[in-house]
Length: 311
Image (cartoon, rainbow, N blue to C red):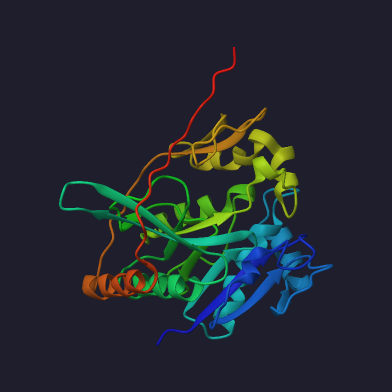
């Protein structure tokens, strides 16, 4: 069985699991926090600080920004740490995941399509990790990740896409280093693509995060995101201008208007390498078990929304 290490990537977000809700989830896998700044952290997760000599090396050889190199450095050191400790797969988690969600649909005999979401703020983590690792076991992917809760559930099971915030890496296939200042996760997938290693999303497995625009959350590195504005993607536009651009919009990923605000949006061209699958049946069986465990019967209900017009 492959050895799996789960790492929360965190820095400058002091407090408890109230501030870092990812730590509320139950885990049986080896897990820890990798951080460049854990001052004021109260947690039962082990904390591994990025060593000063690695910080100095990363600053000298890798960093491309004066204020946005901590997260890619932490992610890079997580890969180094996991490899040195004999792990096969590395799961990287953002520290602000507030719930996990299994999204699926049901086609009734009368042609009605019913869409369902089962959510948990403390469970599902082990099962989602099992699913991601099964995909890595049975494909040539370097990355297997979950989807961000946004659009309505649909019939898509696996898709070659960008994965953020909750993903697993095959440590024998993935690159060593994250670059890309603010857009390190996008840059990493493009680097995998240049190596011929795809990134696969398990679409029914989703996560929700603390909303920056509605909650005015400026903890962690988010204050730097806000200050940078459109400079967030300046290096990506130079290196991968055929694929990456960015801009502002008025809607979040959940297609909701942000009151009196604007939303930074990545604009990514679709590209596919193609995924080689060794054992589709093993992947399908793992998803069937996930659905059998979490897709509980739900009572049908109708939702009526009344909008009042003010004269």
